[in-house]
Length: 145
Image (cartoon, rainbow, N blue to C red; front, side, top):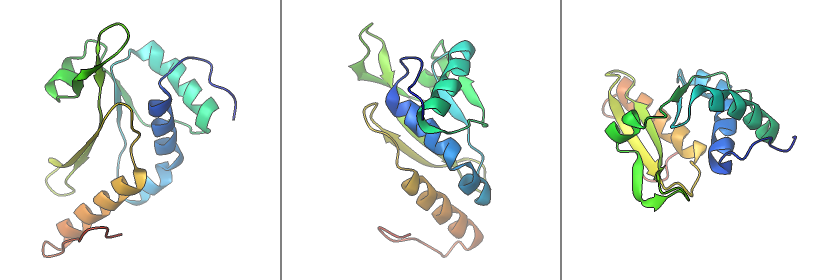
């Protein structure tokens, strides 16, 4: 892969690249991916190029823009204890998985800004929610997968 062209956060870049590279696995599970950041659309256009250069991932899913941080505040995604050099609160890395039947939030996992997400864990939770939605008596124990 080529070297990134901009100075984008490496953790986010690798996460979005991983999501793009696993797009078929998400589709096989009937999961739609939506990304989110507090950057604007022009930044996202450049970032998508950077993601491809750094990871080989082709981002084909939507990336929501929230430069005003309105949605980030509403979803409690800002970490007041972790700030950028400019003093802005860092955005935590959250995963929201909607329940397959109710389409309401069925699972939330939040990582600190310094730690990338585990896609194996995301798939484990998706499959657990889908199994229990199909058969409500089904529960998945610790380390199931």
